[in-house]
Image 1 (cartoon, rainbow, N blue to C red):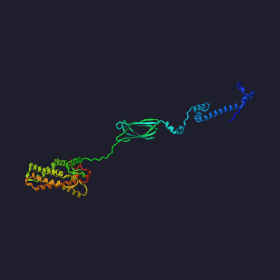
Image 2 (image 1 turned 90 degrees about the vertical axis):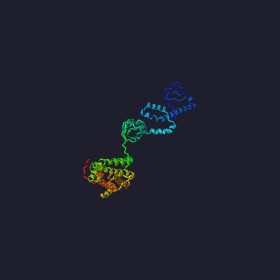
Image 3 (image 1 turned 120 degrees about the vertical axis):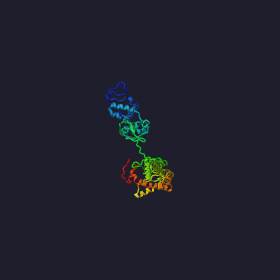
Image 4 (image 1 turned 90 degrees about the horizontal axis):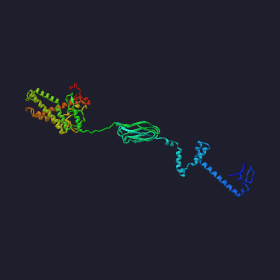
Length: 435
């Protein structure tokens, strides 16, 4: 750096004249007393200090120039430059630590406009209530939110739930509960910073589709089956109690065996049939010792009813209870006509035990002959004996075989309450129902 003293045509004040050696107005030079080396050295020192001060000022201005760029750009001119310089001089400078660690993060955040926009964007919320079909608040319901964000919540004791700090967008809400049908709210629009108070969401009780295996009391089930059998009547009026059309029917308990036998003996149709039998015996003058007329008919009626009642109570009630045998006839309906006929006749000597196994029918055979033997006590003395017992027993067995054939082939088609599948296997007799 060099310095030069220029000649300036200016008047010299009186206080500076002693320093100059020439009076020429067009130029000036230092006086001889000031041209000594000591004075020259001092002058150069002053000029060096001024130059150093100027350099420091320019360096500080250069360092503050980036901070003041915005201000200078927005308002160019000397005034704005001066204000920018003042603002730059008063702004605090980050320390070295911030520049080393936090400065990098701050610079990254400042350089991510999307993140700055997200920070400035307002957040929204949903508020709702879960109720049951009666309108009562439902606690513990699970609420699932899907959309721009996904979240879950659970309704509180007042049935309330909420989702907060949500961005704008379209959402779906699904509410579920134990034993309840799920409920859905779809396409719920949430504006930036908006708060939506949803309508109450109702959960209805789900229709249970449950397979329950019930183990009923066998005795109660047997009673239900017996009640159905006691309503079976041929042509609508003839009792058909001892026919079972359920191959898998539960066995009868003792009191149910007694009920069936007793009901069959007091049935009005039974009483009428026995009366007809007594009339036939009187017409053929069977048991002449009974005589004729009302008295003879009454004796024959009493003897016939006693034999029938005794046979039923022994063969169908007492002995089946003792031997654990079922007195009913179980309809087959399978096979050829001949095989079914053999099955029906053989059921006179074979019956089903309470354990569902086929055994010899001790109850029927012993019961019928026992009833025939007991009849010796009320028939005329002239007709008593072993032959009477055997005859009555054989008649009862033959009548039972004939009845079984009717039960297998004829009676199902004439019994209104018989199952339709059973009626198909019977011989159809076009006999009108009387009742």
